[in-house]
Length: 358
Image: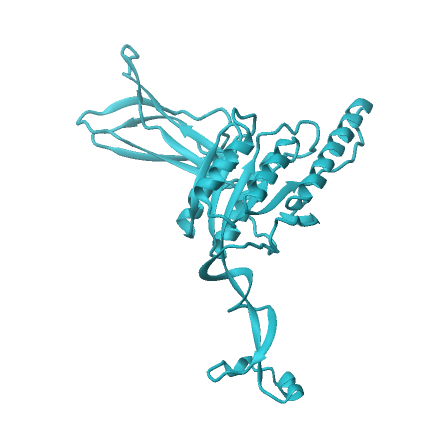
């Protein structure tokens, strides 16, 4: 995960019956990886059929995919008269997935529920923890659900009924296609990716069926699924996410992915920086097609201290335009602004729309 060191182990074996006096190994690394211990350059000698192993540590690689290798080898004799250079095609991929943090419990609502018990309130009677109503006692009801105080008041046995909690189908859409230059004073894109990873982990842990669509320079999608292996697939896809413009409008891509992978009346969670009008059009199209919609967006600090006058004015204009989009989006879906503080948690909610269930 992001922030963890990675250890690379290289095993070298002399498969011949002759001694190799001088050999130099250079295990090639990308420029954006930093050695944290050991060395990837080594000079040694190998006896016949001898095997040596050495390792080095990569210090806290950032999220992404890296290619380690190939290993360049140079051998020479004691007189330095004969030199051989060659490479071994031993390339390996190092995939650094986003760090997963524990989120506060989010109030998710949907209209379509699976048959399995979960943690999402279904607004129907069933197994749960939230009180729903009282009903007359029927033979066979659990005695622990009898409301003795209400029974004494009504002169008949009544039991407590609870709101059932079940699993739902969720599609997490990560929108990283817009240009947020000059608006955020922190890395909003990496914050989006980290929150998407944490959200997918929480939803999977709760037993929900979760899918993922990433829209940006790289466009990927993962069909909804359950379990820890599926969570690894989701995190692997987020490791390859790249911010930047895309060739197709997000409305077209999102609509095609949603209709192809998600049953109607399921929940769509859009994570976007809300810096262009396409996001509002996308929310409208998804909501009108009958899906429950939740929009999550990073918060913006309007502090302009230390900025030039022109830069400060530009930031205020961008922030005002973004606030107008959030207000428009609040009429279509639930909009929650995310705090970029020490913990990943919702900070403020804009009112729900009439299309969003719950």
